[in-house]
Length: 421
Image 1 (cartoon, helix red, strand yellow):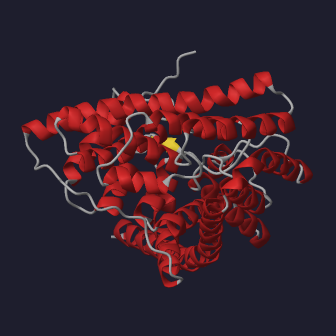
Image 2: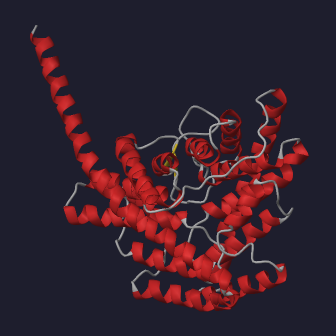
């Protein structure tokens, strides 16, 4: 009888503790969603306005080397000698390094400058840094425990991502899934979803439309379409490996050839200007949203995916800021649109498969990728998108965009991953 009463008391204490945690994170996650979401909306508008200004004034491209010098100077003035980008955010979630608040204004301004002058980059990497650094700074000011600060960083990441793309489910799960491959920080599950949904709702109220694409043709689930999807998933994984290797190789090559950061940025800017003139199009400057939409509509240039990869690697490797995710969307969409029909798949559908397949391969986040397909393209064909993501995750191996990402479980065996020396 006494044992039963003691067990009941323990369950009651546990319930109260969980209710208190829910109440605490309701307040903190909603505040993070509103605060970071507002900054995310401002960042979205800044990048959009920069893009519109570049398109209206093509001569701005020639200022890209100057923009590179300004970005390097800005980081040096702020005392940041070696910026590790999104990797620092992942390490901050694990409590390994502090995430300084100054990261937010630095990456905000630097990304806007990169887009204004035609560097090839996205915005989600910047969003993760903005959201994470703001949340970390607020947590420090509030005197939160280390565990709570780490959870708040996850909230900031998911809120900024959701405000930019209008994909709250993907944003929340990505912030949880990207840090450790194979396991998730489930203690942050409720805060991450609450902050992401709050930020997405705020962005919608302020007039931002969520990112979404209409897929023209969807094959029915069957033996043939399943096999075709598996094959395209394998090819997307290979493209993802090429994408990641290209990003890392460009960074190493710039560092070896141009140890001086100012010279590196200036040379990189000049290279992008020359490549743009040689290509005869501005499609590869900026994020390339119009090309992604065209590919999902069934129109793509055969070698566009390789050119976007090249432009992005040379831009980010030189020290310009932004992110790699939207360029990976571009690469996947252009590749899928061209290669999918060769496998017998509709061009529009294979472009959408390419987006989530390459995204999964470069980030090692299969569940986020499946949710991304739902939020970008709707629920139809979800089983085939899931298969493409699963295959790409398996085949893409243990590399990825983020060197700070920890591999916990093997991709081919139900055991912990042992890294080869």
